[in-house]
Image (cartoon, rainbow, N blue to C red; front, side):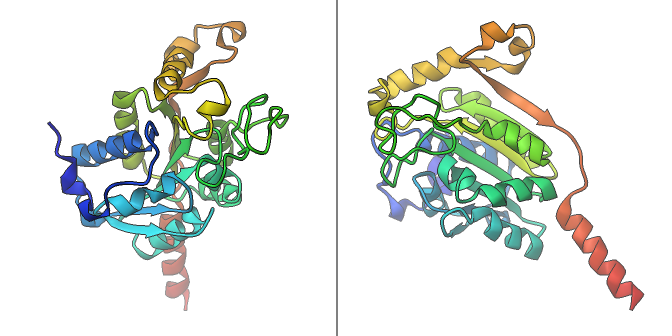
Length: 271
């Protein structure tokens, strides 16, 4: 059995996540991916903002930053500029990453900074009161939408792709093997990589939206996820209400910190 404790700050346990929350599943998938890639702990910087998912760095024995709400990618950009040799990984929620942090998200992808963002998408603000987030589905209930949300929601993977990310993937907390594999690919990719993980929040989202148990939420993920290859053979009608999983986008583009360093060297040489 895999020994997770070698990567954990055991003194920080027990964790704060609710019973049935999928954040711990994502944490375990990330640790298995890092182990499989044989990356040394001191060569990793794990950065987060504020939220349930953002408590992750507190539990791991890496270089870690728990920063302000929505600013994880900004801090991570500074880290990558200062130490481009390190593996910079950002963990963020759908509210933290695409609402108050949405501008940083767009421009980190546009610049193609060599870092990996893992976006925990539970469709709601889980820690701060169950408010509507940018990914809350239309019609879903939240503390700020007691009659159902009327706002169209972001497709965050398409947003990352359109903004310029080199690698975009989607998985769920149910598909644990796929999750680990996508994390491995994202971490190895040069440029900005983003993995969206659909994850259950039975406390803030599930109980308001007729998915009252973690099992019910995981079954929903299983029933609504469609692999990319299978989706290519399906009609729009067949895909209605579903979402695709797997590698959604994978291209090579110039990486920002390398381009910046070349500019610094050029300017220094011209003096």
